[in-house]
Amino acid sequence: MSEADFAGRGTTPLVLTVPGLNGSGAAHWQTIWEETRGDCDRADLGMWRTPRRNVWVTKLDHAIKAAPAPVILCAHSLGCLAVAWWAALEGQPYGWPVAGALLVAPPDCDRGDLGRPLGGFGPVPKVSLPFPSIVVASRNDDYAAIDRAHSMAKFWGSHFVDVGELGHINAESGIGHWLFGQRLLDRLIAAANIRARLLPEDRSVAGPWSLYPPADGPGAEMGDPRY
Image (cartoon, rainbow, N blue to C red; front, side, top):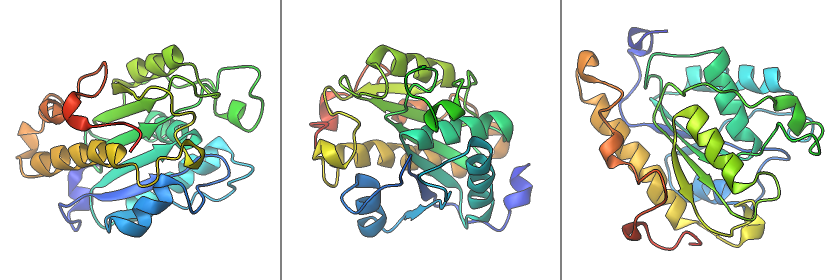
């Protein structure tokens, strides 16, 4: 798939949220962003209670191809694995049509105690993602140890942000609109906007990275990760 295949698209990215197991309810930051930001739409992968990897990957592929603009993926939990498997199975030129991804609280699907449906998304794909990405993880997430989340970020070539103890970084974490996460998302969008204005031959892998937070954690300017 080339950029010419998407010639009718705009240049301002559309943010596609990709929830995890059981979807994201009304108090989840993904749902709040969809209702308040104006640039977010949910990728309806269906089968929220009984997800299947290949079905989710196929539906995510359809959502990306149907999007009216370059896409930023904003995934939570098992949705992160759907994104990683989409990259592994479908692929794309670097940064197009997916221009970036915010991957929050990816579960360790290689853990034997998780069982299905999470285990059905294992093994975790060890593939460099063909777009800039940020992995955000918590130190007390029941679904992945912090060092394992850091390993996934390394597999995927992602920047890594440790937000301390925020559980599974969901509605139960009490983060509401989660402005810290929105600032990370806005950095991805800014990088995508700059890249979209470049000539194709100038859109190198290295181009947008200066806009991203350090790999070992957010800078002080990012603010408190709880809000």
